[in-house]
Amino acid sequence: MSEKAYEAIEVARTTGKIKKGTNEVTKQVERGAAKFVAIAKDINPPEVTMHLPLLCKEKGIPCVEVPSKEELGAAAGLQVGTAAVCVTEAGEAAAIIKEFNK
Image: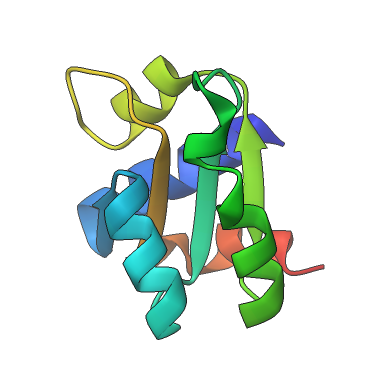
């Protein structure tokens, strides 16, 4: 499941739009602009991203936990790890993201 999440983010990065970081992702979710959210499990302290799954559930946005912030950052095109990434415009990743809506 996490491989699909990384793939969705990579494809959306090149063909659509993504936002990186907890603050940016939170803003997009609250506005209802996020189509898909990925959160890293290995964030310390976990309180940094604790609010996101609940917020996503409220808004009906698919939310996935991935094991590594480093891999999440790499999928988002960053040199460093990131706590959260959201897709705001799916581009060609729409089909992959649709699989998470089930």
